[in-house]
Each structure stands twice: as C-alpha cells, then as structure tokens.
Length: 109
Image 1 (cartoon, rainbow, N blue to C red):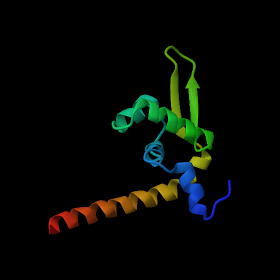
Image 2: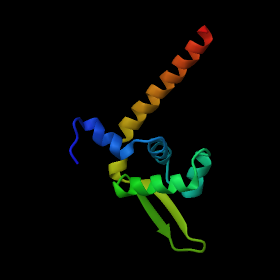
Image 3: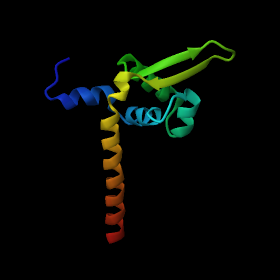
Image 4: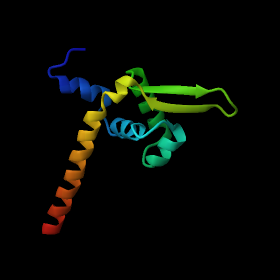
C-alpha cells in the first residue's frame, strides 16, 4: 500500500480504539486472553480476539499455545512489537497531560 506520509502506516497497523491499549498491557508482561479482557472490561470478547489476530498478522504480537487441558494461550510482544515502546510511552505521557488539561478546564467552568 502507498502512504502519503509515514504516520498513515503507523495508524494502519496500530490505529483504532483498542490496539494501542492491548500493546500497552503487553509491554508490562505476557498476558492470557482472560487477563487482557479483565484489564479492558469495555472490550467485547469478539473485538479482543479480532484485534489480537490483527496485531499478530502484522508481527507485533506473538501467540503461544501451551498443549494442556484446557489449552493455555499466552500473548506477548515480538521484537518488532517492542520497537513501538517509545511510541507507546510518548502516547501515555501525552495522555497524562491531556487528562490534567481536561481537569483544569472543568475546574474553570
């Protein structure tokens, strides 16, 4: 696909409401699907599964299946996924400032 500016490629890979949130949770350690669901109660199971599959398809997330009963599936960041850490850290830092900004605006009204 051709992009007009590089940020389009970034947004295509990790855009949307949930992908960056999933990546932020995985940068704190490997997670099972149920753990991710508990950390993100507003996401549906279907959407979580879809987002994880898309992140896996582009090589940001690795899915490891442990053959046991019941089967255990664990998600983790790949090396390529870890390369997004500075971007995720910057997004979190900006988000904290934005939350403070919104609080200050509300106090003024």
